[in-house]
Amino acid sequence: MKRFEWVQASTTDDALGQSTRTCAELMDSNKKTSGASVVKAGGIDLLDLLKEGILSTQRVVNIRSIDDLHHISFDKKGCVIGPLLTLAEIAEHADIRKKFTALADAAEHIATPNIRNAATVGGNLLQRPRCWYFRSEEFNCLKKGGKDCPANVGENKYHAIFDNEKCSIVHPSTAAVALVALGASIELTSRKGKREVKLEEFFISPSEDVVKENRLAEGELITAITIPDNGWKSAHIKLGEKDSFDWSIGDCAVALDMEGSTCKKAVIVLGAAAPVPYRATAAENFLKGKSIDEKTAREAGKLAVQNAKPLSQNEYKVTMLEVAAMRALLKAAQS
Image (cartoon, helix red, strand yellow):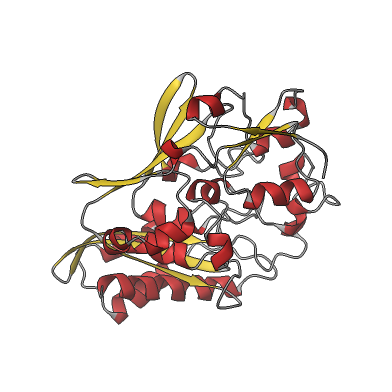
């Protein structure tokens, strides 16, 4: 790992004054500058990127001690979460679990307890892909300026089954799956001001920009996450090879607007399935006006994966995500 300068930011303005760049921008050699800085919150992914030698920076700006970014509040409209709230704090918060069950469920099953106590929700949303070709210095894949995606013809057991024609990464954030299902928005702040973006629109597919995964611009920070409180039922199901600490190989978050036993509207989001959290719109449309029982949940699960295009080694994900969607629907409807 190369040497870098360490800067302790005490306020949001202090952090914004450091001319920070995103990790994706720093990896683009055409955008490197002598004053380039990158933000550290929990530092879980950032330190991995630095140690693995696929990211280099002149300055790390630590924002972990900024009180204004570590908060949670509720009102009639919903909940506002600071990006420095840890995954453990989210999982253990009684009101989040009551009102936004899918988010509490998702946070509770990310990584290990020690990581959940350090990792922040903002960092979880911004972490970079875990694809082993991207993470290895030995492969110059598309995301690092190369000419092709090695995973498409190589080892692709854990890769995407949707939108995988150009680059077959899966989005690494489990929290994002739940937050997209819950209709969350994020506040992005720079020295020029603030802007609000729907989280679903924040993430970028490789077909739009193969280098970046989100719309965070140079000099911007996530300063708040807003979740509307519409009284919907929700749930999250994570499936992995191990019961704890393992990365998700298929997960699903569901949010349901119910009138008695009838579904007025459903949002179904699949994780570890595509380069961005994947909306299963055909399944959502199917559920409108129906009671959610095992039969309708099973049919919705099939519709959720009907457009899947598995690679050579990950066809198992089609069945896995179908089952995850069915289970999440039943869990939410029965809550």
